[in-house]
Image (cartoon, rainbow, N blue to C red; front, top):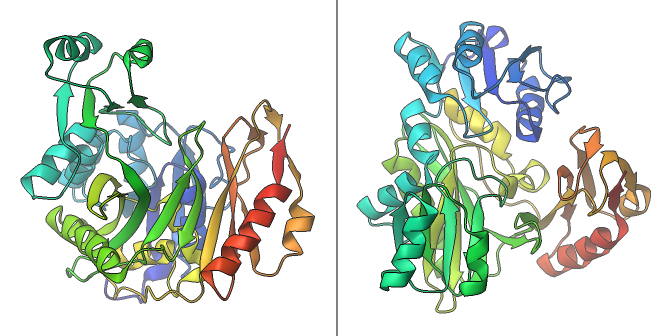
Length: 385
């Protein structure tokens, strides 16, 4: 859409309606784009900000297909969408970005790994198994050794569907689903790079960030930008992200999660073809946010600058353990007294243990100062019921 004269009449469909959709809707409103959101929950984060809300399931063929009839273009904030409906819509001329065939591959972590292997992208050595019994048999025959990581091929999200198996004692937790079994890597850092690509083929990526995970929930708790890595490693990480988004011919965004091992070697972990938790800080800290960049990419506009304006820390605001019910935010006033603290609440009425309820970006003149401020903020805020 190089001609922006009719941008105010564009009906952009977003599937589904979580916090990523909400932030994309807010970015689209700056250009007067009409946003249509479909989600099963009429109180989802994006429902009250979009132009029009449709109640429906992103996994249901009929719901996705009907939703597609109402819009000019579809993008998404989650991978687990009914791709058969998307492919039908595409065949009928509907613009769907990123492409449904790409989404179908990325939905399956096994197909992701095979894609990495085909394109000579470094990734942990792996094997594919259909059942728990196959994994146990591989251990008995010596085809598989401890320690390893089990990842279910489809449906895992925010740390769910991943199991670290260090010894015999962990086998009772094995999941009986088609799985990727990976050799465990001795990880020094976990990092992420978000690449962008438009239909013209222009490609660029955001600064490399470090990710710190909550050990209980196995989901991202803190993002640090810039990463504390040498320039060679960061340049290599950026090249891998650019190579993958081009190899998949993606128009949109591709978040690439990576490991850096004890020898400073990079290993690709997994990818997501959408805005990503590791890019939330870009709203304040980068010239062009990941949400504006997605719009630029799918509308085939020139990509915006990805220059870092200030070092930043992003803290996920997670529901407190042991609390489920109507959310109460404690400590926000005290946190907002600290210079450079930017609060984003997603509008989820009910808190649950480790549920993502919002995030805070902390800006500072230096990386160390941002970390110091973020540590204060983390100790101030709790989300209870």
